[in-house]
Length: 237
Image: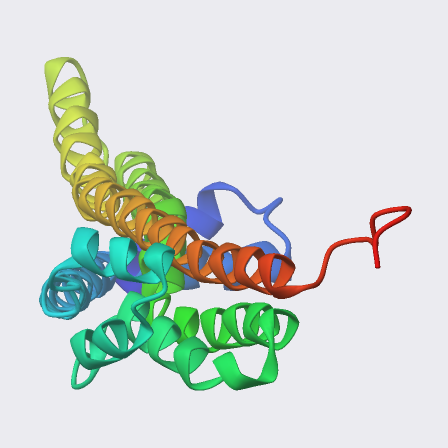
């Protein structure tokens, strides 16, 4: 849209106010920058997905079932040796809990909650970006579509054409404008899928970590209760 066409449109519609004219001049600029923005966001989102997939995949716990048995049966030395050197959520939490065993089950349970909250932040990194992008990318695309439609109709009003040429001009402009909406959806859908997948993955890790932790706490409390002397038997010496 050239400035001369905008001036011509103002002359044909003198009722346009000063603010409307300024906003119209702004919105009639090219909307292609919206597409470039969406493409850039798409590249960043796929980089985040790849980084998170590699991170989650390399944080797996080895011998998880065997570790759970060792914790439940009180073989704490073997359990500690099994998690040494591992960096996953389950391994870090269990290792910190085992080191706090001499302080009693209540302290171990507090360590479980505190370390779990600390380590969870590493797994939630960048997930908010994927969630935000999945929620808002369609609106960014819709914004580009609205700009394109405004430009198409303004071009239609500024050019003297009749008959089938009007339909051709309007349809061509609108079809180009709808590309932004399609691109916005194309960016949002993978981001939403990845966000839900990683969130579910993290929830599973947290549940398994809590199961291991409470297995250790339960075993410690059971041994502590068994070690306590029973009530005195009446008449016994």
